[in-house]
Amino acid sequence: MALVNEYFLRLTESYLFSDIAKKVNAFKLTHPKERVISLGIGDVTQPLCPAVIKAMHDAVDEMADSSTFRGYGPEHGYDFLREAIVKHDYLSRGVHIDSSEVFISDGAKSDIGNIGDIVRWDNTVAVTDPVYPVYIDSNAMIGRGGTFSDGKWNMITYMPTTEENGFEPQLPSERVDMIYLCYPNNPTGTVLTKEQLKKWVDYALKNDSIIFFDSAYESYIQDDKIPHTIYEIRGAKKCAIEFRSYSKTAGFTGVRCGYTVIPKEVMASTIDGNEKVSLNRLWERRQATKFNGASYISQRGAAAIYTPEGKEQVKKVVDYYMGNAALMGEQLRSMGMKVFGGANAPYLWVKTPNGTSSWKFFEELLYTAGLVCTPGVGFGPSGEGYVRLTAFGKREDCIEAMERLKNRG
Ligand SMILES: *Cc1c(COP(=O)(O)O)cnc(C)c1O
Image 1 (cartoon, rainbow, N blue to C red):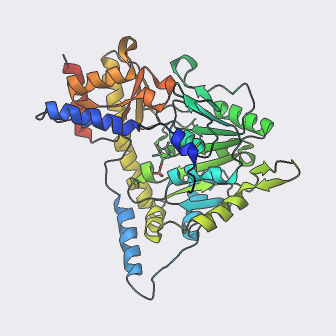
Image 2 (spheres, rainbow, N blue to C red):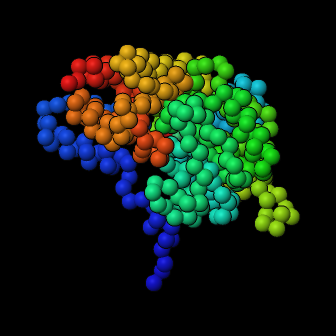
Image 3 (cartoon, rainbow, N blue to C red):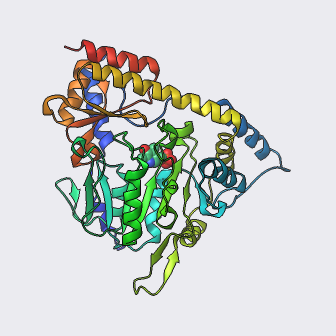
């Protein structure tokens, strides 16, 4: 009989959001009249902007005509989008990226999950705690996690980010090969300054490590001092791979488009140490074999985000969500709660009162206010004692949620 990849069997069974759904369904059964407000799962609610819709409609029309029909596109994406990215996301910030270093995909999650294909299975991995679970699970699936017990994988280095260290992960004391950083952060909504991020680039350069930098929330940065791309840090082009997504930027969670930047200078070594190999070349090879490109229609939609109208329209939606974040942050603080994040990211990381556990506070909010949040401990052991609220809801719901919290018994 064929054998399974047993590493899959080591993954934890219960998925955070299905546990939440079960509890919410139980509540709905016993409270059929109450309208539940969800500030839990990280999905957007506002529609695509007009510039994107127009571009996608036009692309469909091209597909409908034999003279403009498009079949398979380039695996690494169309030049019109790669060039727009180079110009608007990087050159505009003084960063020189070549369009051959940009790989378009159907979203950041696939790339983050697949990137581990091009490095050996026994590299060591470090992640922040709490963390976006994909970084850990995708590595555990091919054996980089080791075994799971007490909420942790024994071969993964966890770097706590908590109130105590100002949500700044500390450099690992031992050498690690692969470091996952996500800024602005999901789930904590916190950011790193240039000086803080520089410590990581310096560490990676000194230790020949690779930083996997997830900047899915880049467009939510409001503060001028916060870097928009890791390549704003000197030396990062030698040691960092950056993931971007149009999902949270422009409501593409259902359209699907994102990209990954792999500068040609990012290298990894063969095991005998005799050869250094460019990861750009390996990823090109990997994608050409396992991926057939993102949809032409999605890529046309994404390119429209970079037009003057597109930029303005997308910013309006980001401002709307950030308005939600500001409103909720202010209200929660006025109720005496400790709130982190929410200033440069659409997430609020709320400390539970009186040391209540994440899940207990989750149930309290559900049963006293009909409000759904995400228990912080679901993102890692250091998330215990926090819950995450998202600012992706409708404005009316955010206002009502805060009213309910104020008035709860
Ligand atoms: C939403 C999100 C992504 C984006 O995923 P897509 O596959 O592009 O939709 C990536 N990283 C983090 C941390 C996210 O929260």
